[in-house]
Image (tube, rainbow, N blue to C red; front, side, top):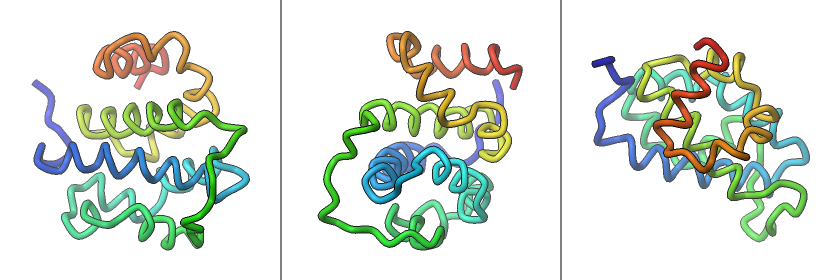
Length: 141
């Protein structure tokens, strides 16, 4: 069995936080794919990857603040990007990083956000685990 990135007790909250974070990114930026990539390569994300509890417990708004993005809590749904797909992307990135103990920066270098967005169909029909495994094979991660 492979080693996971950090204790399982943080995994569910990381899934929820990243889902919310990706929704906030879509609602508060004009370039969500670039911002998602910036986040995945950020020092915050690097500390999360290492299992640092101080960073694993940061809120999505704190993470966006660290990227220089001010959150407008009244911002509406971004009509250009499907938020369900963005949540699925958050799940995939979080799961792959946690399950395979990979650096988020390495994952996003191989699977760009715009490519992952386009892979929602048909991968969303697979379980999260199977979808991640297929992506791992497709991108040779």
